[in-house]
Image 1: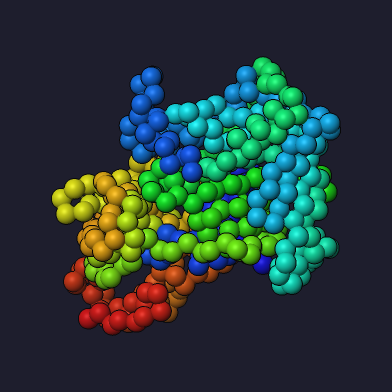
Image 2: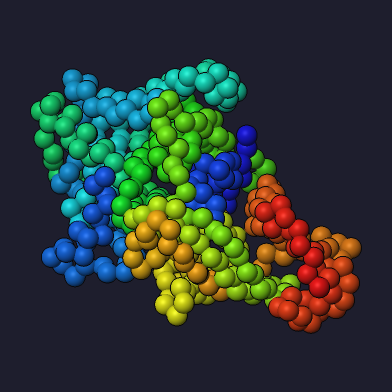
Length: 421
């Protein structure tokens, strides 16, 4: 299945929206959305002036680089490997460098040299899918580079193997300098997912690797227990000037339980103004109930073409991502159609929460014959997702009426139709 994404600026790193395009249901039910859990607290207690707001924490994760003093020279005599789901990664020979610690926790590593990944899915359908793209029902690929991000025990596992192989760290500025630009360009695609672990009392480990394949080119391996199908292999490719994402395989390995939704939306009240230029501004009031305790982050499906002005709970302003201060680069890197709202404190199961979300943007295009189509699609993508709404202006001219252009407007959201007069 081919899935287009944005401008391919971050080569071969799996855009988060590619996952949500392919399998929206694989995400935690975004209304219907380990050691790293201590990251925020550790950062706040760091000796140097620590970042104290979520956006500053994100900026720190975006800027993190390879530590020149934490580079290891790996040779074939050692056995440096990782197992995630059905996959095994082997780092055979080369240089392995860990990221600088943030608040006492390392969230990434890079490798240059000779490595190998092997994965054999058990599902016949997944084997057929792999054979379609690779000519074989298995992942059996050599790679020459690897960019890793994680919130699980990857660092301790790798350091344990290095220690067992009697490999000591060395300072290697040339190695870290060679990776600097690539690391900086790729970090922002993973920073929010890493930060999100800090806002949960029951975090789900995250591991992702962008591998420089010797025969297939760069491809991605994702093992994210926040997804209903945690294990994914895929690759960016360009066709006709557009970037697509090929999902080679995506499934849940045996013995892994799918995550449950932490919040449920009980009701929505949406007021929207369609302006003469077809841009919109809106206010949505959402009544949410916590399905479990200890969670602070509420995800919503929300078009990236809309800009959030503010999110409040009563009169209290809340942090959201993205928001009106999110840069164009951050929005492009996150790449998905999700809006995250951060509660000021962990919810308890059964808590009712009313959120007010104010936003504006341009999601309407003229489909002809007086029909205006509303979607999350932009000019660089071919897939059409009917996830948001369509508006058919049946009669009348521009002018506000109950927050919507006058006339009869047929609104279809999530498969339900209402006729607003």
